[in-house]
Every structure is written in structure tokens, then in C-alpha cells.
Image 1 (cartoon, helix red, strand yellow):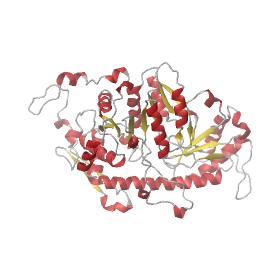
Image 2 (tube, helix red, strand yellow):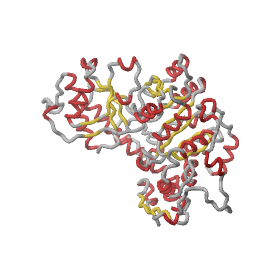
Image 3 (cartoon, one colour):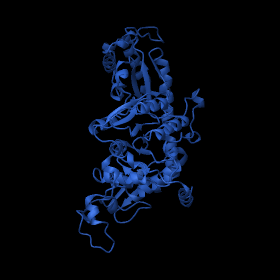
Image 4 (tube, helix red, strand yellow):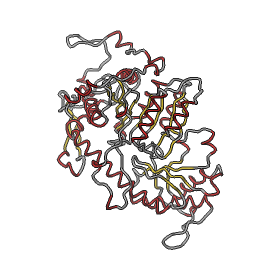
Length: 494
């Protein structure tokens, strides 16, 4: 779609609804930073001596270069070297003098320009006045989005199992999470409707935080029908949806029947539409990150929301991070605008999907082989995680069973994440005997998958009080406490 066509279509779309009544009182009135409110914006013919801004001649970087590999085997011609120059723009990207200087809380112009184009291509938000703002990744974005709609003592709806970084943000903000039931597709819209309809808290529920694709930790992905149903409930109860979607571009498709039928051209497997793409009201605050699709410590992402929300996001950025590193934004901008272009970027995303799909397929196949009778799971269609319900047999009701399992796993040389850090507790959840483990199949080398699952199987069997028979030799597996293997971490810090 050309820029002119996109602009013409946007002009025919409605404006976002004004949901500023859901903002906390501090943000209901748009306020500029006190300094900018007094000083205004300097013009080109003005001698600016107001700001504490260093002269660019003091910046020591003369040029930055990076060698870039091709985004896929199908696009080998897009490999090359990108460079950023001190005093002049490089292709579409600003000069180093601009990238290294203070800037406003929106983000560098070239970086945001690419992300607007990509967001339009991918999601086509169905209202006119949306925009993007640069972020330092989704953990930072979550804190900012929550602060717009919740203040100390308020409640926010979250999935019954959720991202620990988000839950930590809520603890620091003194905002209380209210868990909503999930199933194999994530949040249950009927449960959400019931929760909102029966809510009797001192303050109203104004927002729901969720991870709709490759959910962390459960790996659940909402179907289009589920997303539509959930959005309708949000409309009914006037909720803002914080759509945290770092795994959106890691949609893997269904598990193939055989290795021969495994998808290799992921461009033929369409992405499930996002909640943003359904957002006729402007009630979705969408959070995207480069962490899972480019590199985590670039610490760059973007927020998509109505313009009046982005005005507040700009203030929050300018009072905390100012904006992500200009140098990092410049490298990403040069890569995506000029070196790869949007076609190369899409090739890269499809190659990631194929790589993670192959990992998922192998790990799930081996899990079926080694964990039969010991654990059950739903095959994830996106993300990096296999969420396993562990069958601890008669030991399941014992409160010490899970800590003992983790200790047995540690002694056996394998690490996976238990359910406790992800669980948003209520009375029913605390009493439930079900216990889960999250295995991340993204980082460990694939030849470590099988030994990791063998070690897990032995650990589970030891807690159940049974012996695990070696299916190939018919002999008992080596006892846990006599093993001293190198540890295998099938886990993730996020």
C-alpha cells in the first residue's frame, strides 16, 4: 500500500473515541513538561541558550558501522554493511550528531516513520488518529500504560497466569491484580464478563492487561473469534485493553503430522489478526518489542495508541527514559529503512517463525515420547513456551511436592520455570493441586532437548514414588541423587 493510498484510507476512518474518563486524574488534563510549557519550541532563527544541551562537536563518535547478515536464504542480496555518519544523514536515518543529542519523548523521526508504515501494513488500525511512540521494550511500556489508567489502591484485570515483570510493576505501583480464568486460548470472555458484572470493588475496573499471542507462561494464542468476543466484553464494560504482544511475530502454525509436512515458507501461514486490528474505539494500547524478534538488549520497542494517549506517553517518557538510546534507534532505522527495507524485514520475521516452528516441533515430539503419563500439555501455536501440567500422582496434594520436584530437577541437571512466579493467586488457585512447569524451547541447543526431558521424567517419577523404566533397555534409570550431569536450562528470564 502506498503512502498516498494509506493516507486516503485513514482520512475516511473515524476518530478514536475519547476514553479520557478512564485515565487517572493526573492524566485527564494534558500537560506539557513545565520547562517546555514556559519556553515553547525554538525557531530556526532563534539563538537558543535555554537548554542544558552539549555541543555536538564534543561527541567522540565519527562513524558507526555494522555488518548485517541477510534476513533469510531467500534474500541473500540484502546482506551488507550499514553505517551512520557524524554530520550527514545516512539514507533515511539521521546523522550521529542528531542521534546522540537529546530529543523528545516520541522517538527519532526515521525510527517512528518505519514503525508507522509497518503497523499500517500489519494491523491497519481501524481509526484515523493513531500513532506510535518509541519505547525501551515492553516491561517499561507496561509500567507506563498501567500508570495512565491505575493509581495506588486501584485494581487491574490480568490473566490468572501472567508475566512476572508485569506483576512486579503492579507491586511497585501498589495496583492490585484481579485474575481472570483462562483456557487453552487464553482469557475466557465469559469469565471476564462475569468478573466485570459482579465487581464490587471500591474503584471501578478500567483496564485489562493480557498477552494474547504465545502467552507467557502458558503459550496460549487467542483465535480471531476469541479476540472478537473479548473485545466485545471490553466494549460492554468500558475497559481499556493493554495488548502486550512480544510474541506476535512468532506465530508458528499447527503441529505438522510428520516432519515432511512441516511448514518452511511461513509467509503462507497468515498471522492471527491483532486486537489492535479490531479496535474501532481506540481502546487498545498495543505494546511491541524488538526483544524477541531482533535482539533483547537493543532495549527498543514501540507503543501504538490514539494520539491523545500518546501525548501522555510522551510526558511519561520525558520524565523517565526521555527516549530509547538514539544510537540504537539509528541502527534499527538504518537496518529496516535502508539495508533490509520492509520486504527484507518481513523475510527476517518469516525466517524466525520457521526456526522457532522447527524447535517447537522437535521439542513437542520428544515431550510426547518421554513424558507420557507424567505430564500433559497443549501444543503452542506461537511463542517460545511449552506449558506442562505435571502429574505428581498421590504426592500432588502435598504442599512440599513442587519444591521437592524442583530440587530433584536441579540435582538431575535440568531447569524449567515452575508456575509459582506466574500465578496470580486467589483462594481457588491457592487450593488447587494442579502444578505446572514452563519449558522455553528458544535458547537451549536442540541436541539438549532429549536429555533435558529425560532428566525431567526421572525427577517427576522420583516425586511420584515410582521408578522410571528405560524404555529401550528395560532397566531402571540412574537414581537422581547419584547423577552429576551438566545442567540444562530449558528456561527464560522473562
